[in-house]
Image 1 (cartoon, rainbow, N blue to C red):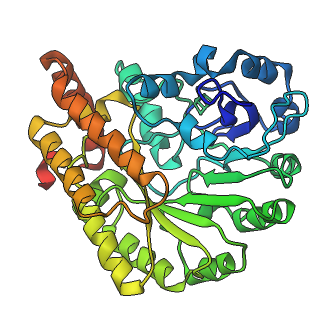
Image 2: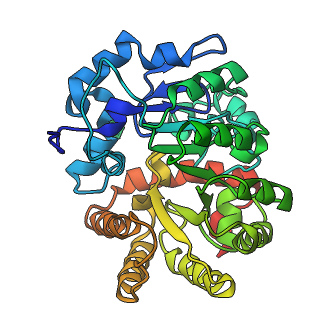
Image 3: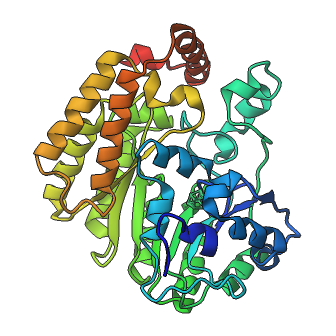
Length: 389
Ligand code: SF4
């Protein structure tokens, strides 16, 4: 019997292969190790080091601090998401560790430059991050351990991941970088689905590469979910992602029209100080497209944890209050139904977060310092957020 409070499926049966060769149990864990092109992923998955991490459990593990922090605040954590995939006949067997949850990033190659991202996830940030590593603000400005380089899993490593997958594997997330920039993506999904026909696959993409050719290839796969990262509409989107909104709008509509209905379409909103009060805009846009194509869109919400100065708590009182009113209205309007199993709890988490932010305002010096850091980055695209609205 699994004691839910003590248990984490990601820790026991998951692997996260990050975009710069960082290996771990899930995307919320801090890095267990970095692999190079000669590393064997099967050996890493079964290594004594990995096993000893599992043995201590998530509550004692130093790597699980994000889940611990979130849960101590009463927020929904990635552990809750991971555990929602636990099979009914689950048996703990760490000597014969089956891979149940796979989270894979092929590389850090990307064609967007999102304000909350860095060169670990997007090669578009490489040039800036090389400069930033020389700056006295490096520790404060970007995430720690920056090593601005292009990294990519080898074909051999992709095959090793495939070997770990069998009919036990329940869930696969594919992220990036931008996964559709890699031609190995669709053949890889096909092979995974051959090994685990009932696997729930989810591709998280920026949606910039949604050509008819790609959509036709995707239509040949078993059912999967595709999630497009959309953090705002119009100018908000363009500022946050440094990319033309009209192109994304057009691509998204093309997908809604042409992707076979056996596949699910969703969006993922990453909440930062820049879009705290933009949820209504996004929901209205989604609803208009759903109506046009007679098709539902799942909505997922994540929140910026790092870099700190982009967190929602650094938005002004006025914006936080407006954000809070919007979520209350969204709940009243019944938007929650049919939006995917996490939307409801994510909206609750967001409500709690905004309320906490309003109760515990950052100290004035902290606010000023974080505004200074945010401005340094927002000016790299010669487009200061404050001047947009
Ligand atoms: S407790 Fe959280 S951070 Fe730790 S392995 Fe589980 S999901 Fe990942």
